[in-house]
Amino acid sequence: MAENNDTFTIAGGDIPVASSSATAQAEAQTQTTESSSDSQQPSVSPEEETLPFAPSLSTSVLLPLTPTTSSAPALTHVQRVWDSIRPNSAIYNLLLSDIVLVAAVSYPTGRILAHLTLNPVHLNSKRILHGAVSGTLCDWAGGMAIAASIAGDELKEGEKEGERKMTTGVSTDMHLSYCSTAREGDTLEVEAWVSRRGRKLGFTGFEIRKRVEGWERGERGEVVVCGSHTKYLPFGQKRE
Image (tube, rainbow, N blue to C red; front, side, top):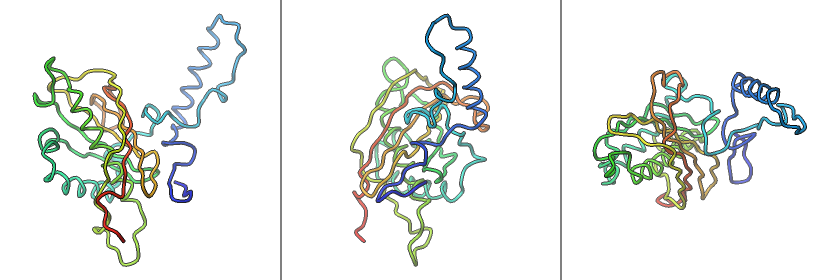
């Protein structure tokens, strides 16, 4: 992660680059498509078509975040932040009392993974995932990703690990795209990451997927919701 004035960005783009195997697979698919096309458009080499980073609202080429790749200090800090927030939020207690944090990292960017099994309280009148629950998950996950990012900050002189900032700011903007549905009994996989964090604003992306067998090895299910969340960070922080 490179420092640029008062902001932090990921070198090469908003989120981690794809693995070499994923890139090779994408190039092979591109070559196959070109060879079978009847169009007369000039050919473009796979290197020119392959982006160096993925769109900020997709985890399709993110390196898998799993319990194996999780960082214990990051996960511990995120859990502490969540434990401090939960008692003060009626809506979180109602909708997210059963959510489980399963992984978190601070490098190359703050990122979290959590699971939530859907109950009747999460459903709308059509008995599918309520949009308000998706919005709540976006709000929650963005804050937890910010917490994961803060867990990687260098401690100040005399500061102890347990004295890191516990606040995650307040929302200034959220965008959600509803891609699919989920029903009672489905377990959702909620992933969020920090695209950029400065002194005042933090920009995050998130994705809700259906959890599938093999998730602990990085297997990903159908995307239900994806979106972005911007937070104003100084709110609630003690002045230094």
